[in-house]
Image 1 (cartoon, rainbow, N blue to C red):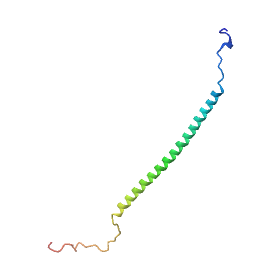
Image 2 (tube, rainbow, N blue to C red):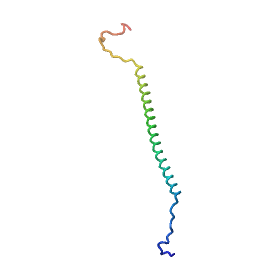
Image 3 (cartoon, helix red, strand yellow):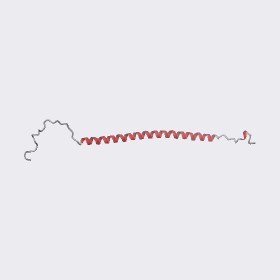
Image 4 (cartoon, rainbow, N blue to C red):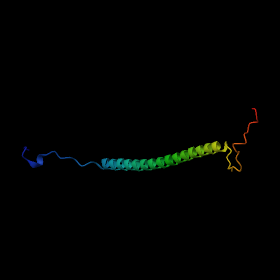
Length: 96
């Protein structure tokens, strides 16, 4: 064998059947883990969104209740002035 011989390149042996099966199993497990990870992430995002919505509704409800309690502290009504005092009718008695 000389260097000029094209058949002189080192030949690689074909992988054994066990190595092929091992690669298929590893790829299958990796793919299954990726799919499970995707669904776990999706479920976590949905659960987080639901919890955030519940929290925001609770905060809104508490602020609404506080605002109603503050408004209920004051008595409000409408009135109409029927007769006004004239400048000649003072409220204070004479000599006071």
